Length: 109
Length: 113
Image (tube, rainbow over the protein chains, first blue to last red):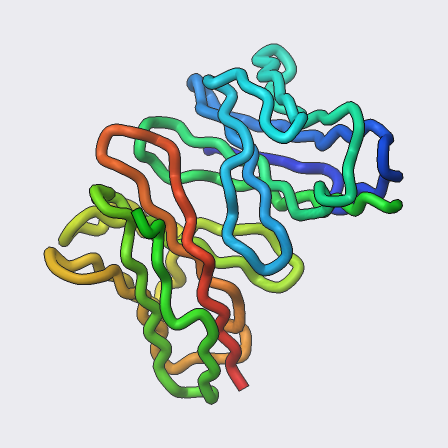
């Protein structure tokens, strides 16, 4: 069975500080990994896909197959980064996503 | 492309009534997914549908919940005899046939009073 774990429910950082959101997964095959962001009462938006290897809004995430992790990082947090962040896994194209429990990020001025 | 459209955005139902949530996928998308987000919790997969077919309903409660995606028209998530515990945000998502990027709607917030 596939599972995604986000150990931190809440991360509170000051503006300009680095932020790292942890994500660990369990899956027997080669999954697709994603990070989604949800601003207050809005739709989930795709932030990153591991296969695209790009940086969005200053965020990066590296897939570590040995540690089965896909941590999300940003070197300098901004107040507008305050949101819920979800790590998700998909096992195949067009397949359902399994989400972690989410991490709420609060960036303080 | 208007994106994934969900309606109603907010729905209030009394216990025992029925709730119907509608989802129109993005143009050209034939895969629809429903997720539920309970207060202070993450998203939980409910059901995955293609046109006229339920592909995976492993996350659907066994009773009172049903979903369909007819040949014409939106996908419908139906909850019969609602209870307070059904109060949640219900998100629909869609993806194209040959891709795995899933796009979400803005959600429908159900409140059962």
